[in-house]
Image (cartoon, rainbow, N blue to C red):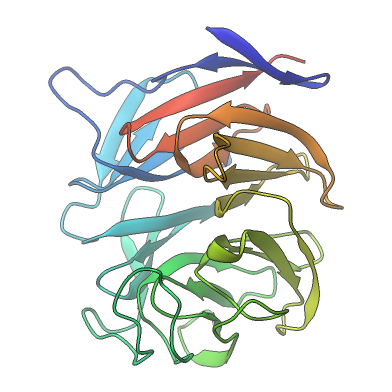
Length: 291
């Protein structure tokens, strides 16, 4: 185990912290999230897609077999788990123990954006969905979905699934997207969108008005807001630099960067410890906050 970070944001890294029962192994780990009881939910690309642990790493169970074809985004708000099924183009919510609640989109039906694959820049924006990336509920009760790999939009729905509005178009300017990949919210209801291939976080009002952006980062795979009000961002490798987990305060100031193996999802518990979901290494590392 090694120490990393700086000052108040010093951590002990425990590689491969979460252990499955004997004979089991993780699939590709797309996301990690903590609920209000500090249970840790791992979203993996194999059945069952959701695996649950306590914060000490003890295996608690798993659920969701057959419910999600291509696990991508997972956020937990209160007692609801919000997921996206990337290749099937649906966004789906569950109870904490895996009972399906709401499904947005039509499974296997993709909107027409003219995008067929890498570099994932849509020719045109379109409606929901074409390979969506993340789903979350807003304090106003509406649901927001980033869409995503083959689209360039954020969609807003009512709590019962009626589309309210969409915004965004392909490009690199303010309010444009090149692979909107993750979403977080603050207490005022502002939206923080990880615009991955543009290597920035864009900030919007709940109505989609552009407010600003954070730059100077590797492509952000995931953004999660902790109970401390800080933002935890999984940054891709960039220009010869390693992957990082970056901690920023509410103004966007970098508090620390933690070098990581390739990290696609980042969760944080109530004590400020960080869980890194690893796609290539198919594992979860834990950064235990020491201060």
